[in-house]
Image 1 (spheres, helix red, strand yellow):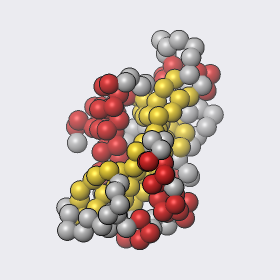
Image 2 (tube, rainbow, N blue to C red; image 1 turned 180 degrees about the vertical axis):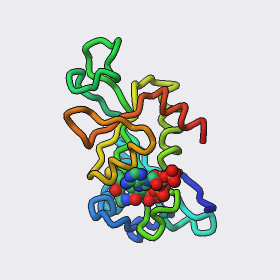
Image 3 (cartoon, rainbow, N blue to C red; image 1 turned 90 degrees about the vertical axis):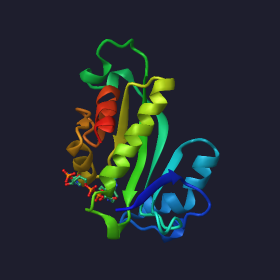
Length: 169
Ligand SMILES: CC(C)(COP(=O)(O)OP(=O)(O)OC[C@H]1O[C@@H](n2cnc3c(N)ncnc32)[C@H](O)[C@@H]1OP(=O)(O)O)[C@@H](O)C(=O)NCCC(=O)NCCS
């Protein structure tokens, strides 16, 4: 799979992307540009090398924090009782015709690498995701993400684990 990942730009055909989840398609079409311009999130797209205008998959990253009281013990151990800073994988999706062929994993590892690089400059404790359903949560759990005890669709990967996973791939 000759795929290149880059920051979303105007050359990308956002309207042509469909992953089977309307909310994720609509966000890319209608909100991703503004989120990126206003620096609320960074958006990264994967395209076939021969067709840089096509979007095979995308993800976005954003700064986030979690209330100390909501965090699992593994995440808050040894930390003061303040909100805990994390990097959120705010969205991640693969085009319907490319699902099940490894691209989701490639995007996730790419996201962890960028999160790791960012946390080298401004430390955060973990990478967090809000999975939209059990299937998505299963995908993240497959890579070692742990569930919040009382919010089963919120999952995290401690930053040290994320860095190890990213460097092993
Ligand atoms: C979830 C999604 C991103 C996965 O991407 P994908 O390209 O289909 O997944 P991949 O082929 O890269 O799978 C990578 C690995 O994860 C595993 N995996 C994929 N989905 C899984 C699931 N639901 N549960 C457990 N493991 C899963 C695969 O078996 C594979 O394992 P391997 O590397 O050991 O062979 C994709 O199906 C998608 O975009 N779905 C619609 C949008 C969505 O639900 N996004 C989640 C954001 S909340």
